[in-house]
Length: 227
Image (cartoon, rainbow, N blue to C red; front, side, top):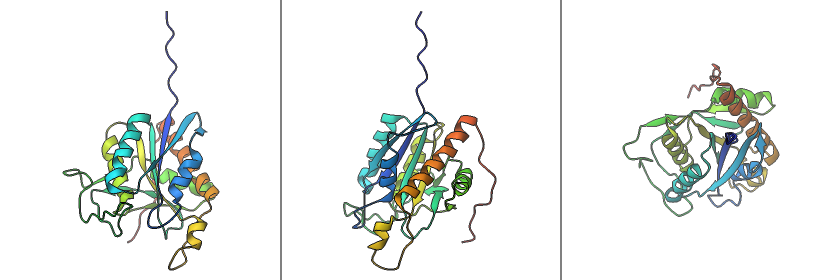
C-alpha cells in the first residue's frame, strides 16, 4: 500500500517592481529579491519582478499566481515620501496615472477590471502586521490609499483574482532606499537602508504566517486616519 504523500510546504509569493520614473533602483524589488529562496517557519518564499507597465504587470502577476499557487501573496511597492512600513488597507478599481509608466502609457480614470467592484480590502491581518513590525523596532502604519498608479492596479488585480480562494493577500508600500533619496530631485525625502526594509518585511510575513497557521483574527487596534 502506498503511503500518502507529505503535504507540500506553504508558499509565500512576494512581488516587487522594476525601477520607474527614471530611477535605477526600486526598494520593492530589492527587498523581494533579498528574501527569494528563504524559508520562514517552513514556508518557502519566492520572488517575482513585475514590470512597471500597466499593460504588462497583470499578465506577469497572473502567471506567477498560476505557477506558484501561493498560500500568502504580498505585493510590494515604492512610495517616495513615506517614512514607514505602510500596510495598505484597500485597492480601488481605477487607474489614474500622474506620470507615464515605463512604456509611456498614462491611463486616466480607467477601471482596472471593467465591471469589477469599486474596491477590495486586503485579506492580510493588517493591524497585527503593523503591531508586529512596530514590536520589532520599526515604524509602521496602516495606509488608506495605495494610489492610482501601477501599485494600486496590481493590488486590485491580486485581490480580484484571489477573492474567495482563502489566500492571504495584500500590498505594502516601502520608503525609498538611501541611494535613491540622496539623488532625488526636489525636497529631501525619508529613506530606509535595505537591511531594515528586508527585516521589517520578514517580520510582517512572520505575523501573517502565524495568523494563518493558528486561524487567528486580526487585532482590533486603531489604525485609521483623520484625513
